[in-house]
Image (tube, rainbow, N blue to C red; front, side, top):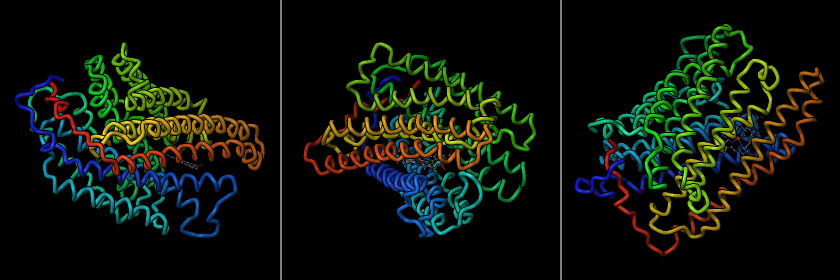
Length: 467
Ligand code: HEM
């Protein structure tokens, strides 16, 4: 990224800081609700359901609220907040229309709340990750279109080559719109049976790969060089990562349904493209470790960098895990076990939530205009979250193996439940640590907001368009 100070617009004209704050507040509120739902489920699985017998608090419904609130409430709101900061500063142009941004903000919260309400009152669709009640789907689809238009307008006005972050963002806007349409309308109205299963598998995986992943990596390519004050190690490698993702990711979805009646050539194709994407992912991780090479001490004193690189280590681990679990041999053991739940938490919290929370740790003082109330509480937030997710993922992955061995030995179902109990207990405590971390973060934000010390956003950090 080069710096062109003569043509640099003022930060205040580019970024609507209040809106970024609102998005982050909404994201953290839904993370709070989601974690409550997770705790409820976790307690239910150790036979301590505090709301036994109350229909709207039944674990099946809260499980869906847990996952939907995380995906559409926390991750989507967190990403939208980050995009409202990063896109105008990278393109040096504001979004298409600030009023549209506010409208989208309000509409999106209504969609997520209506989804949670609909799920609590039993209106879920029988589609994994597409449980959103049918009447909400068209509204969410229009919302995604408006988001794409609002952000693509400033990007489309740029001339010259685009910085890799904008490649990822552009792709994410288009892919998310298409992925949502594929998952929420095609199996619902156009195809049935195993074909619907195949489309559902594509949808589940593309939500992670074509919505969350490009936004996450795009943000890393933006924030890491700014915080380390040096360019990304290899621009060429970043393009390998982008095009590798674009080519291999959409082919993998059926790996969620191995050993099902879906034709075997599709299942084998998904296995091969999954292994191919692991290689691509490795190039991205190498690029970021190449970037921090020589500045490793930043992980100690620069908290956002620590969040980011911890997320990257978890990313590498989760991809390595994926390369194992996608093989037919491994699937025969771990399919339907807690191994998969461990994997899901590692990627969703250990990677993408870590990145969003790291960005929030960096941006909140700039948004509120005050330095953190307590650096120590920031440390507590990090350690409770990092250790919590490490223990939760490790525990569930191990528990999954024991469940798989129990089933493979043809033991009665009860035996596999008994063997799972110690792991489910540990999950409760790991969840409490993560939840505790969130509470500490919320308290720190509140105290920072109430503080007096002023901190101005350094307009000099507005980078010129990348070329
Ligand atoms: C307080 C912390 C948390 C606890 C106690 C918790 C607990 C749970 C439980 C009990 C389930 C259901 C597992 C089952 O059906 O057997 C679940 C599913 C899930 N959770 Fe969490 N969770 C927590 C935080 C999170 C966070 C922060 C995220 C994402 C950022 C997340 C993402 C998921 C996902 C993606 C699933 C679905 C897994 C699958 O279908 O394989 N969880 N969680």
